[in-house]
Image (cartoon, rainbow, N blue to C red; front, side, top):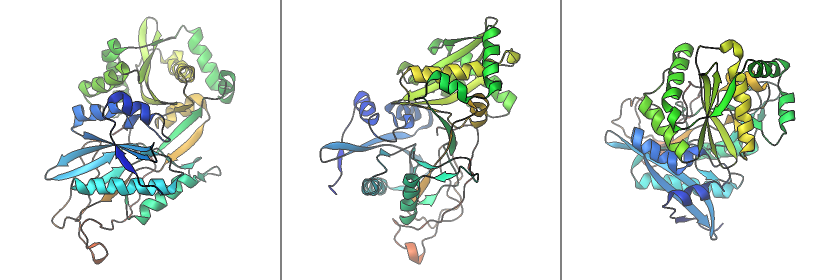
Length: 376
């Protein structure tokens, strides 16, 4: 196999254009996401791209952050490459591990957008995906540790948008189709939003958080994310209105041929008019009309199941970490909000990992689902 060559893609346009052509590319690996996390949480993006035989084959946007005297690294939903090529995947992992050691990181975390299994866990349709399982096996072979602290949601539902609208509607339950018609009959309308609606969207999100009992971040965080991606043409708010008032909204993020339902919100008004059903149907239609092949629920499983009644239930391979240096004096490092993988207990070098650069961390279980927030 030819050696990988590290190449430079220093501009936003060249980075995103190249990333969109790679398999398993994700919006959290875009230039905009790296800059957003730099501005809001202090993660400094380092953008790595590799070519082989003159052809771009892999990319990774790796955030670096200091925690006390230590450095930690995280590549959200990366790296992007053809994981079907096991030799390429191994070579990129070698490069990432060397990069982390060069920069003195105590761990590196990745959670590529690779399917580990599909179907409902433990049910008859539960199927392991060979590509995802091979990646997991390779990470274990390298003594990467399965992360007990998952930043991203581990499960999602995806909808195949190659189906026609009539086929998509037919796949929904009769009750769902009836509620879409109710919303239309009751005069619910859907409009595209803009940055002018950011305060309105946050008010709806606050109401949703209070009603459904989950914590949300300050307005400045969401405004930074939503504004950056809307202005870049990578996000679209859709707002449902009834009786002249905004009663529900979704914010769709899209990149390449995929659309993600990242944020959903609603007021406590006009719920009997079923605005959320019409809104989800409008979101699916918008994604399809804008060239997306896949509609990803972003792990809002209950909400989307209520609407579509079908789809492919996907379990990602989730996050693994490599602890690159054993630190005998380290006690318990508490997790930072959203992004930091905690190192539980005391890190000790054993005879099997006396080289501080190559400890052998243990695998630990992690729940299949985590809390409301994702994206890291």
